[in-house]
Image (cartoon, rainbow over all chains, first blue to last red; front, side, top):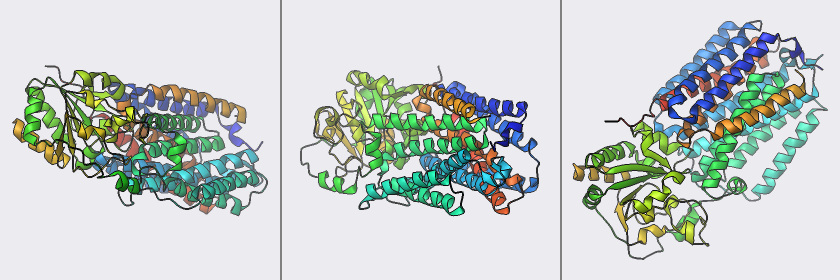
Length: 470
Length: 94
C-alpha cells in the first residue's frame, strides 16, 4: 500500500478525532436555540484543533504565504458575514457552498499533481484506491461549485428564476454523468493528466446543466442538495488524506443536506427526482392560469384590517417569500407588538418551504426581534386556525391554497398547506390580484367569503395598519 | 489506517449525522446550513498540506488558493452563524 499515513503518530489521529467530535457537538447544539451558541463555539474549537494539528505535524515551508492566505480569506469571510443582510442569506449560503466545492477541486488537483506530499504514491504512481477517491472528490467538488454558482445567480437575481430548458437535456446530462463515472474507472488504469482534468471539466459542466432547469422556488431543495454535495466532497478528500476529522465532517454535512432536501421535498409533496428534473414553476404556466378568474372577491383597507385585528382574540401571521422581498419583517413585528398591547394573542405560522431556503422565515423573524417561542411550525399550529379569529397572510401564497387538499387536478394537490381558511377571517396581503403563486395556480382562498384582500406592497400595507392601530 | 477502518468511521459518522440532524429544530435550519458550511471547510487540512509541500509549484499554488477559499468559509460561516444565533431570543416574561 502506498498509504504513508501509517506513520502518523497516535496523538495526531486522536486530535483529528476530537475535532470531528467537536463538529458533532456543534450540530447537536442546534437542537434548541439555548444550546446553539455553545455548539457553534465547539465548531470553532474543532476547526482550530484540526488546523493547528496539521500545521504542527508538517514541515512548514511556506509559513508566511499560508498566514497571508488565511488572513485574506478570513478577512473577506468575516467582513461579508458581518455586513450581509439577513434577507440575502440564501445567496450567501450558495456562495459559501461554491467555495467549498472549488476548494475540494483544488485540493484534489494538488494531491494529483504532488501525490508524495499526501503519502498516497509509490514512485510517482498513485494508489488506485486513492485515484478513485480523488476523482470522486474532484467531481463532486466541481458539481458543487458550478451548481452553487448558478443557484447564487438565481437567488441573487442576476439570472432569472425561471427554469431554462435545453432540448435533450436529460440525454445530455445522462451522457455527461456516464462519462464522469467511466473516466473515473479508467483513471485507476491510466493516471494521465487529461483523464483527471476531463473528469473535472465534465463535472463543472454537469453542475451547471443540473441547476439551470430548476425554478426559483425550488431553490430550498437545490441549496440543501448542494449543501449535501459539499459534504460528500469533503468526505471523499478525507478518504484520500485518511483524515478522520474530514471524514466525520463530510458524513455529517452530507447527511445534513440530504435530510434537509428530503424535508423540503416532503413539504412540497414532490419527489426529489421531479425537483431535479426541473421545469416546475415556469413563467408560462403563470401566464396561462393567471388573471383568468373573474369570480367576486372582497377588498379591504388598512383601516379595516386594523379594526378587525384589534377586536380579535388571536391573530396568526403567515409570512412567505414576499415578506422577505418587501423587507417587511420589522414592520410586521411592530404590528404584532401593538396588537399584543391591545390584548391580542399573536402567533406566527411557518411553512417549511416558505422563503428560499430551509428556516429562512425563522431567521428573518428572529432578526426583527420576534421571540422564537411565538413562532410555530406547520404541524404544531395547523389545528389552531379553526380557533383563531384572524389569519394574516403576508407574502405567502401556494402554501395557503386550500385546493391542495381538495382539487385532485391542481399541480399542488397533496402538498401540506396551512389551514388558514379555517380562521374566522383571512386577511391576505398581496401586491395585486393579477399574479399567481410559484406553482402558477389560482388560489381558492381569494374568493372565499371570509377572505379580505389587502392589495398593496407588503411593507407599506403593514405600515398603514400600524398607523391605524396607533 | 486501512481502507476498511476509514470506511467504518465514515459509515458510522453517517448514522451519527442522520440522528443529530433530525434533532435540529426546524427554526434553526438556516444556521444549520451556514455552520455545516463552515465545518465542511475542514478541507483546509488538505489545502495546508498541499501548500506546505514545495516540490511541485502548481500543487502548492492550488493549495494556497484552497486555503484562501476555505478560510473565507470558515471565518464567514462561523461568524454569520454566531450572528444569526444571537438573534434568537425568548419572550420576555413580564
